[in-house]
Image (cartoon, rainbow, N blue to C red; front, side, top):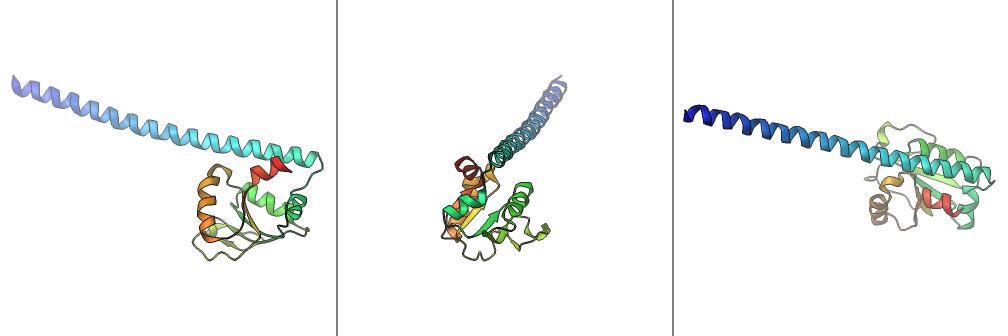
Length: 158
């Protein structure tokens, strides 16, 4: 009788542990999905603000020139980074290089380096990865002696 009870308890304990592990996995996946959703909502709202800025006839170039940022780097070369690079085309603002954690897989009009590479001096770095701005700003501040600007902040200050 004891063998049967022990086996039953072991089975129930194993099932409970398995259910807890599955629950943890599901909770982890839900947390990842929420983080991605939050990130994409922030990017959407930023891009929406960018459209409003353009509709008002304002320019990011003017903002940077007014603040004497003539030579910049762009951190983050996904959609917002590519759009920002295009914004500066045919302007007085020079994009010296871009920084991205996936530097080896990005092909664009400027050199793309990783955070681990040597970063040449620039007047400012504009960060397009707004969901991770604080961490990026901290790391860049250790390597560069210039303002680290959030694209989102610029769009609301223009």
